[in-house]
Image 1 (tube, one colour):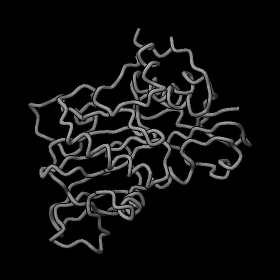
Image 2 (cartoon, helix red, strand yellow; image 1 turned 180 degrees about the vertical axis):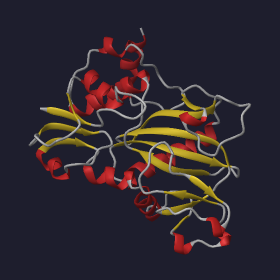
Image 3 (cartoon, helix red, strand yellow; image 1 turned 90 degrees about the horizontal axis):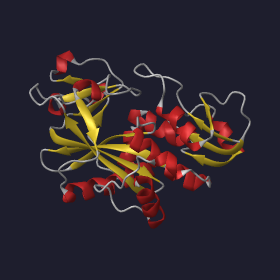
Image 4 (cartoon, one colour; image 1 turned 120 degrees about the horizontal axis):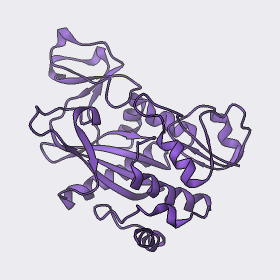
Amino acid sequence: MSYILGASKSKIYNDTTSHRLSELLGIEFRNTLKNVKGGDVLVRYGVSAYPLRDYHFTIVLNNSQSIVNASNKYMSLVIMKEHKVPIPEFYTKQQLTTKCLPVLRRLNYHTRGRDIIKVTRINNVREGDFYTEFIEGEEEYRIHIFKGEIIRVQKKVDTTPNKPRRYIRSFENGYELRDNFENNYTITEACAKIALKAVKSLGLDFGAVDILISNKGKPIVLEVNTAPRLNMFGRQLYTLYIAHVIGKEIDLLQLSRLRLNKHASKLVPVYRDIIKIGRE
């Protein structure tokens, strides 16, 4: 048996990405492994529960420990720093001084940046698990990595340009991820290189890396997502790659929305013709 383990629902939508991926892949969706002893394939989509089950599957994509590494935001920064991935400076409350300000108050676990609060005064520090350097940036990208390949590059685009700029580039703040954007290939290539390094350092098979371009033009990894929300194209793209790794045949007629993402690095040859077929 093959399974994809993910959240069955979220606060903003009921039909989750992991559930839709299971339908496209034709494998069983589970939100728990309580009654599952093992099987052929386990795809963990952001869920690290039941870590010992990993040893009872032939193929595991994103093992439990790798998801723990990425999901605990403080731990992920520690690990990436050890591997020389460019990240913001980070501090405990005891380490904070006026020289560190401004900083962003962070929690170890969060979704969609809801925990992030800007701190500008040392006597007004909101309690948090840790604090990261506040970096002024002009652009933010999301780069999807799968098994050491760059499969998608997106840019966070402000859909409300007349409103004040917000340092948290989230859907709730009026930003959306786009595949088609004015591309600076020098920046994109620099982002791609560190995205690959970030995912590898955390031990992940796949992940979506958020990268900020500072005002000085330096790419900085903000975090790595192990359960990114995907639109139809993204779901079909992930389905294609997962199916190839687990040796499952997919009806290409299901993947009619697939298209070559011209802003990503070139896909490996086995996928180029498949994507062309999917576009016909």
